[in-house]
Length: 221
Length: 221
DNA sequence: GACATAATTAACCAGACCGAACAATGTGGC
DNA sequence: GCCACATTGTTCGGTCTGGTTAATTATGTC
Image 1 (spheres, chains in turn cyan, orange, red, green):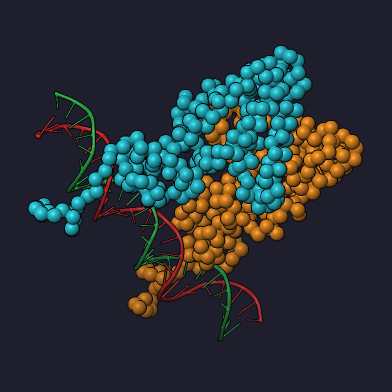
Image 2 (tube, rainbow over the protein chains, first blue to last red; image 1 turned 180 degrees about the vertical axis):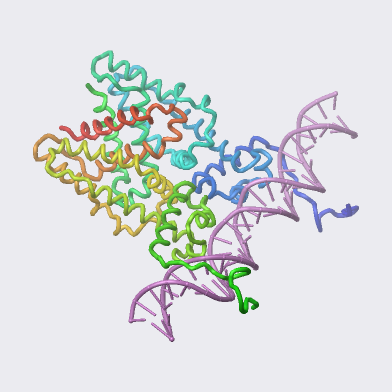
């Protein structure tokens, strides 16, 4: 209505022109949302803030992700996917079991350090009692490469008689994860209480080595 | 207006009578708030919900705690205080260092298990980058009994030549905390991915023993 | 080049929520 | 009996916020 003839640049609705880029828009939203969710949590995040930091609009968020929770779910699933890929990349075949085990432990430690956002998302998800986790068949522990690697390493060590019996791959993974995770998740409160020394480069190197020591000494016969 | 003479029980303002109990009201609020903050986080918590679950009113919350953040701060400080008290109660004097160390580690593990709300508050506070922590002089690591106990134990073990050199009390505390904390903090996501076996009584007993093993084997010469 | 459909923009809404403002009144120490 | 403090109840404003409605433009296809 109106906007009949002549120039179309003055009053209303000249409406910008744009190029279509569904995948781009989608992943742009996902990436921004991930940062903000990791920073502020599910309830702490404002959809408007995500929107304003994307190169698209709020409406697009709802267009692609239905609602806030839907967006959060996809962010979480995406983060797990990427982390798993990083773990899959580790190559340990051929190494003697005690070397492989230490390497796996220290790799995990470093990998967690690099993945602050992921850790924060997991923290948040635990606050929510894991209600938004991806379908467990997608991320089941059985087909995790971390577990299968540990399985092989432990079996080898047992075969060589250098490891003690009675442990499981999941238990080992639990311990490695605990130490690597805590280092990131509790940095803020821990350094507030005990000082930041353990978190500078030297301190981290020490901790990383201890983590390797602990896991190794736990399994050695 | 109105309400002149006669009976004072029908329309408005007969106003209940009550006993004064500032401390009671205050701690009632604190306790309810703690549960809800632990459950839903800082931004997830509704002041109105806290109010409705107390035996007092929303007005009183503002009366005693100024605002939401003030309440949250006090809840957090209170939780730390209680946890520290529980740690202080542990008695280890006279035990040989390797026994004392294991006992301390396994005690911490159990103690964390019992303090789910506290752990959740710490998780939440880490999400907020420790912005609401009590003044560090109040909870400084130096005057923590956990640290001083570890100091003594480690010194004894060194003197007896059964511990290896190069470790510190804070590092040991870090490891013990990491393992004990993760067990509670990440239960939801971990059991979602790897199953809940490690979290039944038998699984927990195993883990607890492993935690003792790990710490002990880490320091043994 | 018309048409259906997907992608995108822009403006809007209704409810939730924090915190404040009133307005009284009871309680307990001195 | 006085006065500061504790307590209750209610109402309200204003803003924040998740989600919606409606109009508009791009694109692939026949």
